Length: 477
Image (cartoon, rainbow, N blue to C red; front, side, top):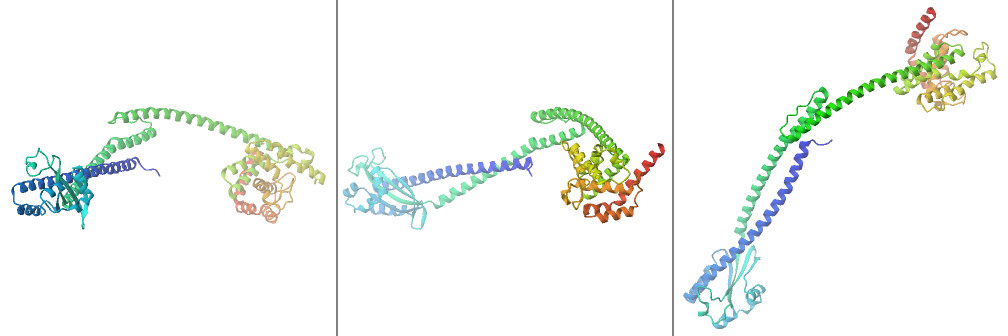
């Protein structure tokens, strides 16, 4: 089952919102990380400048002991950890300081002295992970407010030393993350608000009007009334106007089609009536040759219809049997009247000639492609076949005999026995039923015999109607 439009729109909006949310959050997080990193580096540089200013001031004015104390004090402020002062070889030689050549084995320190550029590296120190290592060079420069060259006999641009320290960035990172979460929360709420407003707008201005248009279109078609095309948007109003035009066109064509269908139905009924009349006329001609009444073929057709219905054939097959059964003896038109009307018992040779009527009837219809005439050919050919294979013209056995032939065989024999003829009296019903029970599984299909016996009351009621009709016809004649 397909989803409704609201569900589809809602899902698409959710999917789009999630996509943009992930995209925006990714961009914000990435840029925020970059900004946080720059801020941390700026903090490291500020601390380094602060240390530089303090060291220069104390080294220029304070005694050596106070200078060392200042350095120790710096280690306790600004989250500074493990601060070291690295003197350049020039300063070490000038002031006969202790040489710490091992410090220059550190590639970071070596690169700072070589490149004369500060170094900032995020690293760990012991069990502390979120640390920023700052290695900041101090360079002799005439532009500085304090004259470096009054104390140091070095060329301009010489690296006098460097300060190497670590800053614990944990608290700063926590604050940064807190701000990041706040930004993400605000963006999420904003996106959710935009999503809800967009969904409400689509619902009120697109989906609801469309659903209303569908309902109005259906109602307009059923009631043959125009659709109210007063909509807020021009597009929907235009659609409603076009639907009105379409409905008008459909209604006109529907009315025209109904008229054509009525004409076709009338023609169909007329054709069927003509067909049935022709079938009955042809059957009457065949029966007239054997001195049987026209009502005989009609009764056989009705009995066959009742039996087919009770047996469980579908409506179409029952109608076919009822329509073509009257022609089951059409082959008798090719048999000499002297044999068909002979009052004495036929000789074997004469009977063989009479039996040819089954083949003649089959030959009459076999080449037709029409369903009805194909059925007529089958019934004409097989209604004298017996269940045990003793019938004619082929000697078919059991279910090899078409169901149409098996049904008509029972209907034909029943009417022939139960009806009075000029050459015989009618059999009592009890004797007729006894014969069918005796010939069950020999001449007749045993299942069909049981079905026929179960509907014998309906069969006799139908026979009574035809008897009344024949009496009235005889009296009137």
